[in-house]
Length: 302
Image (cartoon, rainbow, N blue to C red; front, side, top):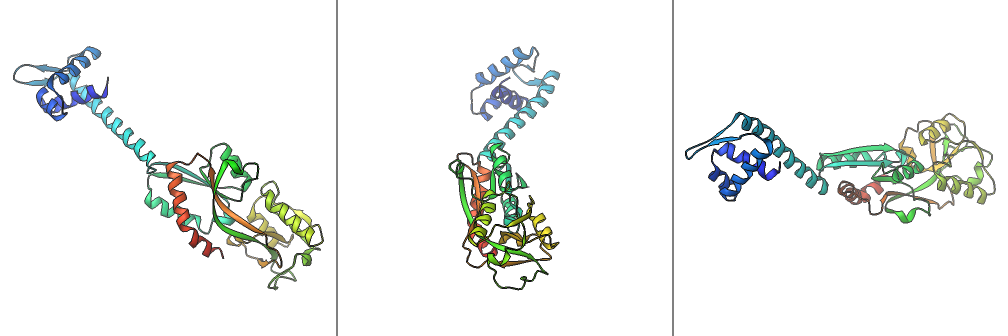
């Protein structure tokens, strides 16, 4: 059964006239008659009793009317859904994010996005940088707030710079150096280090090791937690000190102090990334929202 045949049938059923149905559908009466005849032949039933004075729907026609109206409504809904998805007004959006680096501003962005696009199903997943790479590979996320991709993979991604983070020393509150305004890495050479696991952030881990070596020592690494919140908890517990991005102070950091490093100019960019040639309309709209919010985000991360 073709949709145009069903439209002709429904129009005749409601108007009880072939000529009136033709006028309503901007066609000619013979076309309406052909559609009804083809439907009756295909179904093997009589849909209307008609004579020169009236058109009366049959019992079989009444059943078809219920089904046809449901089918036409579903077809229209499918058309609207496809168009809305194309326009970025319907669908889904999956965002990977690094908690410490983006939790202070991401919820507000998602709320604003949801107000403008209430029919987009937004899924937020906290992930490390390495987990985001895997998620992109498996097409599990559309966008990711993360650190730069490894050089070998950067050509496959497009990145929007959000803000520049910096490395700081993180000490327990009771540490002898906890009240200093700045701290040199060389002052920490006797300390036990808690460093974020290299498997989760190769670039930051290698940078910390290189900076320590430039300061004249190799750090004694006691633990390598895979979550930044765990790193802060271990520092607060006195297990060791850490060198990590300043932004993680936005996590639960009671018992920790964050001290700028003297003579260390290593910046850590946070980027909003997506695979090249794979940006859905819904993801593009969120990226545009983030781009407009960058000045405000940068101010909040100072």
